[in-house]
Length: 313
Ligand code: NDP
Image (tube, rainbow, N blue to C red; front, side, top):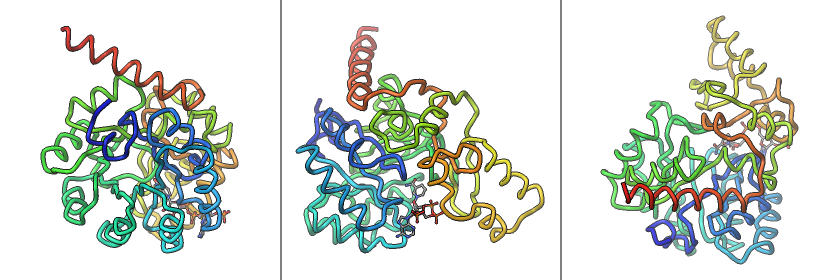
């Protein structure tokens, strides 16, 4: 399937699996890439030696292109950048930071750079910084999120109208139906996270995968804007955050409630009450844990069938 995004990355489908802390290691990334999409290792939860090993294992498991997501507020970001360069990772998805900082250096080593944005303002800054493409991620998305609460439906056409470089839509997309809608809004490709948390190859704890598969409408919420806005499942930890808000907690007090390694506790260790469970609104539409290759094939089949039937209408 030809599209600017598939051509940019050298993959069959313009379907990207999001890099997610604790959920997307080499197994998931390689499986998605082998199925014709673009798999991404989420490096935000990996110590530098862990990322290096993950990249090496991914290279053994697939000869197709894959990427690494780099949250720029990661404490050892320079070590991660050095790993990408040394290991010749072909694609970097940068997020949560300023794209002017690393784009030119990564590109000078032949690495394609995509930056994740949640507003037109930052999309324009990313384009000016020389990135190869942007991910326009709407309010529906899981994990770290924008402050403005702009939905995918509104954000994607705005970003597409403002930019010349390829735009990848994210937030609320989980199947062929939502992929086709994003492409109709002008996107050149899509990125999905929550759908791939519920894959057999995801490194998330089975408790978390099952919780996501059971989640219904309205079970997630965007919170902790004072620290970093994040979309989570409303569980015991979220109730603690709500209690702190009710007591007019300061940012420092909110940080104390969050503590350290909450995301690991929830998503990797499977503590569904005390852990932070980062997931998108679309978890309400994800009901099954499936092999990643089957997820990719189902999405692309549904996408093609719907596109054909819409053309006939
Ligand atoms: P915390 O400060 O609460 O905990 C740090 C966690 O990261 C620990 O579990 C730790 O593992 C692990 N870790 C990996 N490498 C390092 C390192 N070099 N220094 C310290 N800790 C490390 O952070 P969070 O869990 O909230 O976030 C972790 C990272 O993930 C951040 O860089 C953040 O930017 C990123 N992130 C990205 C998101 C996205 O949407 N892309 C969403 C949320 C977070 P251990 O417990 O084994 O020590």
